[in-house]
Length: 634
Image (cartoon, rainbow, N blue to C red; front, top):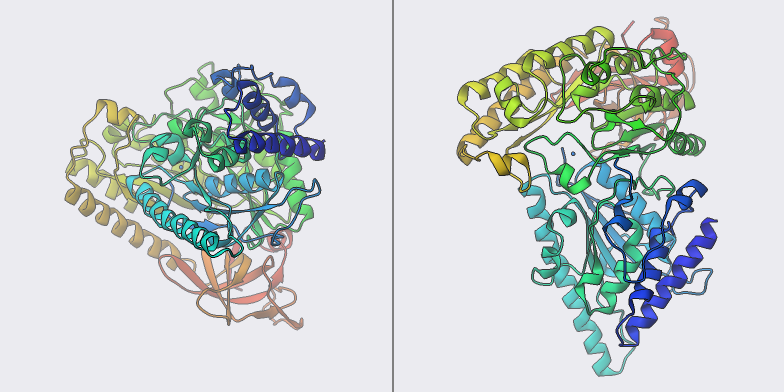
């Protein structure tokens, strides 16, 4: 079915190109046929139930409901990820006879954007595109963007200006070649803006100094081949933009194309969107409402990754632990690692029933009969006991006891919780619309440390939110010191339009005060991390080796179960880990990416641990020996 649908998509794309190259106006019926081909899932064979849910596109073109369906249903950074080329050949042709083109994808921001770029790569690969690792070879340059803060968007604007120069130089080369009568080079590449910044700014990106040729929101990636062709043909800019958000789209039927250098780890998207509507956050406006991917499709993808030798999966979602699959019947599993039933019996109040004690939200959760996060996490961990499981990014409200029990009981679920606090002041938290107090948050931290021995905690913090006083800021610093986070993502507040804060509050904390407060928060976190990591010295951790250290070919790098970076002395270790004090007589072997190695921690900094390898091991064997993900050196 996937091959047939890919053929249909390519046929529709060729029809679109013929219409544009003919110079005439494209008919509404032709546009509808091309859009319907894209919306029907070309680029990954849709399942029969999904195909049955789709509706015909009207002859006058797609409307709002054609994008969003009828059923109501990030801390990002400025780091850049580039997809390495896979199978790229000059002037290669597809099985359909069409010349294959080349696409270059740059990704900025959170892990969810990285996962989305894998979806984009799959969609394009099914439509006669190969990936290239340099923009010089590209027919289409796609920039997957972040809009969480002004700083993130500023980096994208700067990059788009650089890419405009690339387009100009390519066009000049083409003109010179044409005048000299030599073989002309390829036309200037199409530059597209994808993701959250595209969703937020929409047509403004097409109107600003010719910096972008197409815009696609996070729910429009199936439409990218059509958008690229529309941008290539020129004419009406309105044909090269799709920022409609969906209440259904999860890309569950599309197999991601992962980076060639991704190492032993992989991302698996399990839900999209966010309903929390925190006062400071743009995500609900750029990612839309929450919708969860069917449990079965997630487990199928995890099984494929296990068969391919993947050693770690990270479950992804804008609010990952609010996962609630209402399309699959709940098996009632999850809670103690061996099928204990999590019933729907409990308090009548939905907050008490589904959230951690003391937490609320601006909406009432509807999760009766759904497969919830604890059950999914338990099922994913059961796929392969030798595959470590992580998840991000969660909301603290969605850590009920059943989730903590699964994390504690499953040896291969990482003993690390990201618990975004945002502030240590109850009054600021109320203005942020976070749905909890400082006291409720600290109670959650206490339960997590009680139920999950050795758990590492990380968090997010915003300094200088609207109306923040010195006393409220001091509450945040004191929370940092009290909890002692191993890691935190900390930023000065940046007001985003459309948010509740932009509508109802005033960004009245001066920039110099924000920066000073942020520096104090960072200092408190660093001291807490140094103290927590100092306690690691002398412990033995089960470390997943990810590759060579970036600074030395004579060292390896990996991460602990608690998500701490470890630099491992040397490149060799014993073939088999022994906890015996009498020594180890197994032969020496080279450590490789994907190996689990027992490592004794010898020294520590605020961000990195350093240690000596004691031998290769397996997750289950290490836990069988020590009963935990780490142990004191014998």
